[in-house]
Length: 181
Image (tube, rainbow, N blue to C red):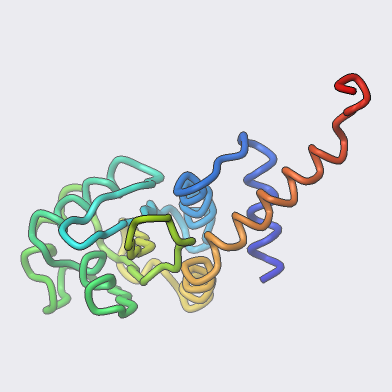
């Protein structure tokens, strides 16, 4: 958990505070830092009748998500529908999503991980989410990277919220209220 807190503190130092679903941009920014090599990341949100990408590190991640939404099938869609983790080491040869495998050639998605993501509740909305990681080479995500990404999916939005709140409290403590009285 300390690794996540440190990662969010590091990311937070370079950006302005962002509440609500915008915290998921920070989750995506941290996800692409896995040591396994170049990856793209996205967060898919789903409501009762649709899927959409609310945060993406690269346009290629957004495009790969959109392909799955159009097919109504693929690891990022099924991770939400089935509440399952899907680690696809070789997209081209995985028998579960042949239509996605054909479409995933552009952008070139060779390996991916999609896992259900815990997001902070949004009043009046029943949202489900998945964290999606895409790589251009087969078996790009080793066990250590997968473990970190699963931790990020489970606790990332919560940790982002806690770190953001701590920063807000520190700004308030440092504010000089004497001029307002």
